Figure 1 (spheres, rainbow, N blue to C red):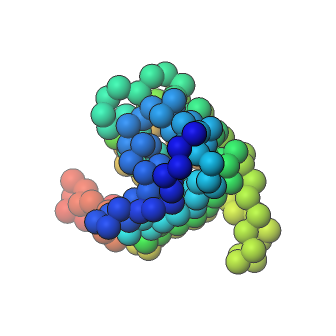
Figure 2 (cartoon, one colour):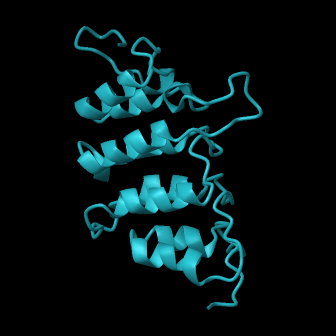
Length: 188
């Protein structure tokens, strides 16, 4: 077993060794942190951008191009089993679902939809909201973007349908920063 403290962040990004391991897209490497460490691994630790371990895996999955089929789901299941909070927001107000839907490497991916379903079905008690449970589909970033906005902008119809089935608002206004000019010169 390892004696190194897995909860010491690097000075530059504030990332834990777990965050860096998640960027490798390797389930076996990530699992090593939970099976070999004698110490508690803080999956809720935020780096300097406010990203938790779940944020990192949602944003980085597929970036290196060598993730084996099923590894994303396995990693997310492992993190959820160790009390990761899928409704945590980073400093830009992005949830894990926002980042998953915005990840271009996962667009139109069946595995991304499976992970989204897993996140949406994972119930986390939230003591700082009116509702006892948080619907990830209704969370908005600081610029009022939703996961459905991200999915629709990426052209992922099946992910968009999944989000709508789980309560995403199809009439949520598009954030001003993301409005585009239509063919007639008007913003849409």
